[in-house]
Image (cartoon, rainbow, N blue to C red):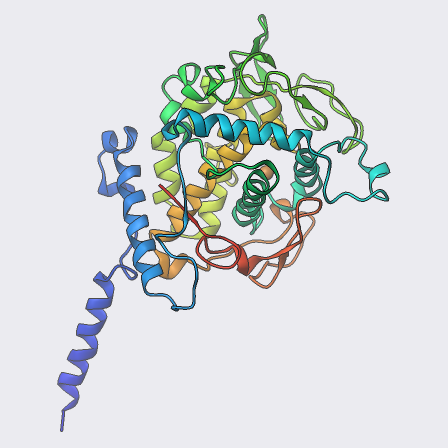
Length: 400
Ligand SMILES: [Cu+2]
């Protein structure tokens, strides 16, 4: 018969083994890397690989009834790694959605949504409708993940796209946004910058209390796949612009961009990205840092930085999905979120914190995984628990 001493030793040994196992390992920290490894992307690429390995390990040890595996999952790739034919078919599918009629708005709804003219507009209107319920909330990441998932499904099901939703890693463009392969304006790009508008002055942004310089464009996207598209909804809250008087007003105009190196250099470098990912242990801190909330110095986060780096239509808080770039930017945000979770899968896979109102104003209850996320004209509402995992419920993808 065993004495209590070896039994205790066995328990201790098991505990130590669990600590070094993949799922129990502690997440890496920025202090594990040098400043130059962080700045040049080495650290981010390294920890992204670690997260993928954790994810792979985790999916192998799941209930065998799961029909989504590491091997069969869609693999989302960075835009510049796509071949030219896939790029073109992607932008063709995006413009196709702008030409299709709405699928969810009924004849009874239509008078209240005069600006909704297409299936694409149903996405913009839904984002406008729920803006104050899906930013700085518990479901910021989960809601946007699901929103871009539905859009990807529409590209495939309604417009014949056979690829996977790409993402935009803005950190790759932090040194020279104006030279980004995304915005060359050729037919294989995501379209040009907006036409340059000269003699503009700095703008004070009231929400963030930050004064920002003008970008390198400001006018209409003039070449490439989105040069001739019409934006129907918004803007609701852009500075230096005539905003609409009602949320869903019909306001047909060109797609605008204003590529702004100042934003990408200050908020979207590998140093910004890696600090957001590694310096935040708790979900509440991580989601606040990513969006630039609760910080005196980081007023935009990588989320706001990506929107304002593109500028124009993408800078409007409510109607920003009007620029298809929104879906690639939020692909990167989801890549960041997915990586954060999988750096400590065991502790983080069901992490949730916050309410369903922006900054908890008006005050609302803490969200739980049993809550429902609203998708308006996009799709049926979704249970939070069904989109918390990219390998379960509604979703089956990973990021390369
Ligand atoms: Cu949003």
